[in-house]
Length: 204
Image 1 (cartoon, rainbow, N blue to C red):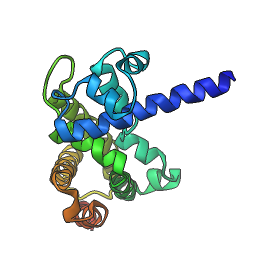
Image 2: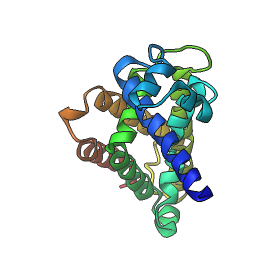
Image 3: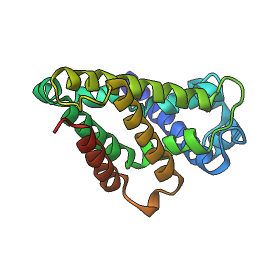
């Protein structure tokens, strides 16, 4: 019985997060109330407060479901590829990220952060975007440094510059695609751009 109760509580929490995603993408974060989220989930406001302290707590829980650190994508790859072909590891991690981003939940939540979230209370969307960009750039720098040490990066291209170029391209692609994701597949277009960019950076 205890297990069933725990499972039911987990299902309720997930349903509330799903409802928050639906409401945030339509109304924006600041203009969505906990009452609206509860009603959309078919629950009471009390159910929301049972699982979350406030809207900020709910918002961050929503983000945790779709965290997409670049380093985690790299860790999913074969160790030999990472150690011996760091540029290929960057390419494969980017492709994994594109594929993940096309999943509806990942797409919705990232669209909320980038295009439907205003600054209020303890929620700072610009700060979150800056943090994500810095994390990606730092992870990229690690692998461009490895590529340089293996003489796989163009000698005239500094690893930190390569990391900044790649991060800027990825950020621009994400922002553009999330504004109107039906225009094209980020997996297909992203693969083309990443392949082209890495070919220009690779030591001939």
